[in-house]
Length: 196
Image (cartoon, rainbow, N blue to C red; front, side, top):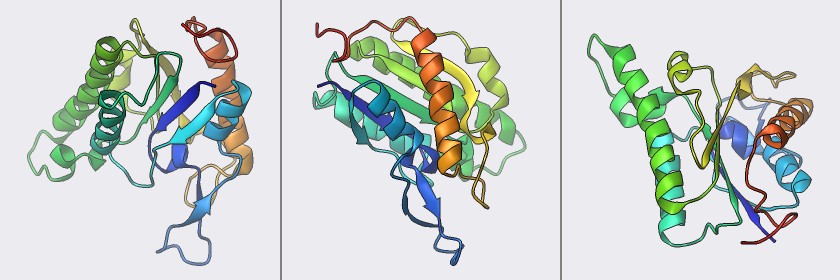
């Protein structure tokens, strides 16, 4: 069976907010998060590397480690949800006047590294955004093994009090992504189709 390898922040992780203790922030994962629904729909095993509050840099390092060690196979699929670039150290700790330039460069850097990884390792990567980022309009194009779905996951409702999708929100995200993925011309390499 092929595998869906997921990378992202708390949205992709499937975080359940802790209503009783907002400082604790979360109390687990939804059993039917959008990423689990995607894996189930396409008959894929799931390896979810996402984590609450994690930066793009952290997720890119996790992805590269899996690729270098050969843990992502040619018949697998990678899902990468780009989070807010202000979590990346080069943006988070920047105090200069051109903050938005540094912010946008961090986003562009993430997209370019994903493109490089997909080409170098010849792996299919589905890329989307967790939040709406202005510069993404410059990167709407999909590349050979990188497929960009132009949505922001935080636009879907209903949500929990602090903005994360609730169970119905995860279903709405999954339904939209499934439709978008089926419309993409991704080579039919996962288990439900054929192995290479």
